[in-house]
Image 1 (cartoon, rainbow, N blue to C red):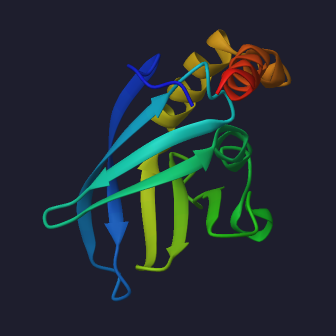
Image 2: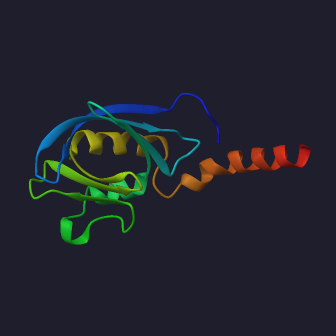
Amino acid sequence: MTTGAPDIVDVITMQLIGPDESVMPVLAELSYRVCDPYTVRAVFTGSHTMSTWLLGRELIAQGLEADQDSCAGTGDVQVWRDEDRSYVLISLNGVEGNALLAAPAEPLERFITKTEALVPFGNESDQMDPEISALIAALLTA
């Protein structure tokens, strides 16, 4: 995978919702690389911890339109609109535990719109062809 600066980076303040419904602020740094067009890297930073997740760009986009009864995602990550449509809920389930985050919808929508301006949905594989060709060439010359 190509390294280097992401093409888009946005920081969004989210709320971590505890099991007792307590709320704690969390910063989420979302980054997107055209050379990895299916993936959004999310680094969540709280007062005492940091966690990095790779999220499907399409999953986030679908979650912006979903509700709790038909949330986007069936695995470790699920995304849906809250009853208060100005928020999106993101459920993360991993080895280290589970987290439920509430994010303001507008900055997430703006982030997805910026990624789509770079790589429209459905055109992701076009961006992968040069990366795959370079990998094959590197393997053949090794």
